[in-house]
Length: 92
Image (tube, rainbow, N blue to C red; front, side, top):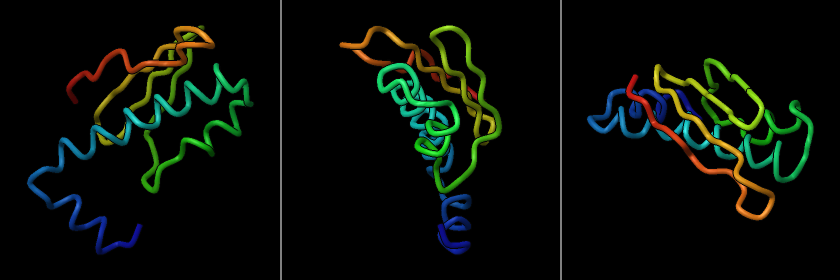
């Protein structure tokens, strides 16, 4: 992402809504890659990586918790057939 585009994103009035998507998308993609596709943690982190880096990633048995730009999202593994779903979108 170019610096200009990033600056416009950060200054936009819809910034909070857009920034929540970063953590939510990463959590869902990482969860699906790890639990459904059964890829390695390293591969999945690279696969789910955004143009903008995440701040933290936590993994429990069937849950992925991601924080980016002070927004946290969780995705939980349901089953191989159902995949993963976003389970929460807590406010900053």
